Image (cartoon, rainbow, N blue to C red):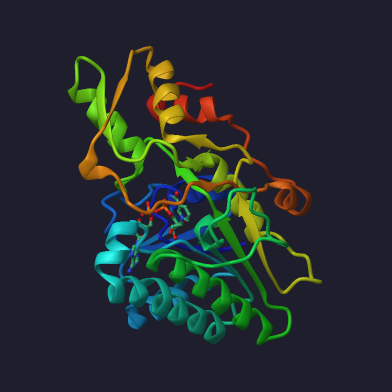
Length: 309
Ligand SMILES: NC(=O)c1ccc[n+]([C@@H]2O[C@H](COP(=O)([O-])OP(=O)(O)OC[C@H]3O[C@@H](n4cnc5c(N)ncnc54)[C@H](O)[C@@H]3O)[C@@H](O)[C@H]2O)c1
């Protein structure tokens, strides 16, 4: 199967590209390289260009003729999505619409995309696809919620179309180009001989999983052929959550360092989601996929990416 991966140079996309090639498939990448990571060397075809540029997109579709599309290109940094609201919606929502229109024009019947665990309403129990309400509470989450509905609609518009959305929870990787918590902690620790880190809210809990595991799940998702279900959205999560304080301590253990946490009032968010825990059971039942790495193994791979567990 020829697979087009938009955002294929990103932290998750580059791992999908490597895994798809390792399985013997052809894979093209469309990425504007805005995240700062280079094109993955394994791509069969690499196009540096913007998702929103129709000419580039159509040229790529004509040349490569993909059987399936995995859509990962997005503005993903949450503060950027808040500060540049229209630009976020333009790339994440209008860009997705252009891609779906191109899929229609070039007869691509299978599209999977990255949604987020952030589409769920804020609640403290494990979020599951069939019972937990959806209620995006920021612009990024809103864009991902729209993407799911866009794909649901697209899947219903033609016979034999398959649309799949991965509700990805918190991805970790050594090459995360976005200003997430783990890169921040590691960078502070690098600069502090005493092991002091200054952070904001310490109690929010998140469900962390490694980008290698997510990529393996996305490879399975693209190939999911259940004909009874034109559209489906599945959680990509571990089913275990850790607070910020626990995350810092676990990183300290991996690094074999003592770490002191100080609360920096300037970083404290007045409103923060206290928990974002996913229920992985349905994804396991449907795709036969669940993360292979534990929390500790995932952090170990972030800190020592070249050491095999
Ligand atoms: N990392 C996470 O924790 C997480 C969680 C939930 C959902 N997701 C989603 O998964 C997908 C991949 O995430 P990631 O962590 O690899 O992010 P990333 O930022 O590393 O990768 C996104 C890629 O998209 C590219 N891109 C951005 N705008 C583009 C545009 N207009 N045209 C072409 N390319 C463009 C960037 O250059 C980057 O390479 C994203 O859609 C993200 O929103 C990620």
